[in-house]
Length: 388
Image (cartoon, rainbow, N blue to C red):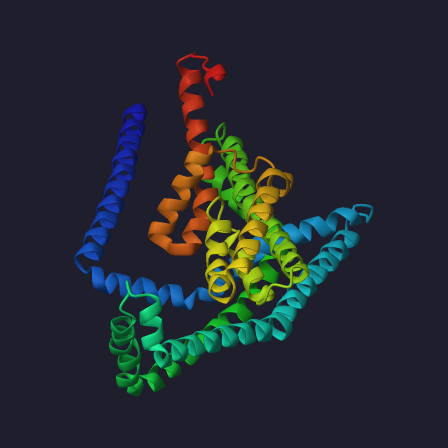
């Protein structure tokens, strides 16, 4: 009798358990259907939610980038004993790391931005003077270049750019207002993000332990260590590429500025910043960064554009053959074809940021795919290691 009762209880428990899963699944499917039907409202709600948690997104981003600096600074302090000494070591590393970051931002705002602004202003004045020269000497220019009707070109520019800009001048004030509001909001999010990132780095080990507990709680005990190891490896690939490429691009930007200063090329700081930033994009970055400088120098003096192109080519070769492999090593471990695939797909959906993040993302997916394929081959007892 007792045995029958226990069986009935077990059966009821199983039915209730399965019923709970079914109810949960139905609830989730209903939410998805409602969200898809009311797509506009869903996107609006998601957008508002992302705006609210923006400081935490910035904080995670800053913590993710600054954490390697903290880890690098902690290495020379290994001799400090554990306990209170461990906390002192962490505090010193974090304080120095943020002083470095804040110092770099201060230099950019106080020294680099004003010079870049002046360079942009000079380029604008040069374009304006060139435009005025062409309009004032239109007949002479047409005689020199009879193939191109410069009058029609200038008329098109006036009708489609200048006149439209003047006719829409009434909208400038609200645009400036919204832009100023956006800038203030971004500055607030960045400041709060920096503050939040400090706490994220301080509690980094606790956060790791929490994630580890969740994995062990939700995964089969025999698979949990492998999952933790895989996540750690993916993080190493992604974070290592971001940090390594940032350092690599900073060095290339500095070398570009030094080389341009030696060659006495104008707008050296502005163009070096452009080259450094675009160098974050693998393969195509140096070419994209070289185009603005090449075009500008082409109008100033074709010889300067040639010198600039040769200099960029030398820097690209130095970066590709020596500096990049030295800093990045084999962090991505993927072939050029997949690097280009990541750049193209990332750029198509997320612009310049996607072109940069596409490469480490593809590298992570390739690593996970390789693990999956290896596990399937092992189950089938097939050894194709020589075909990798």
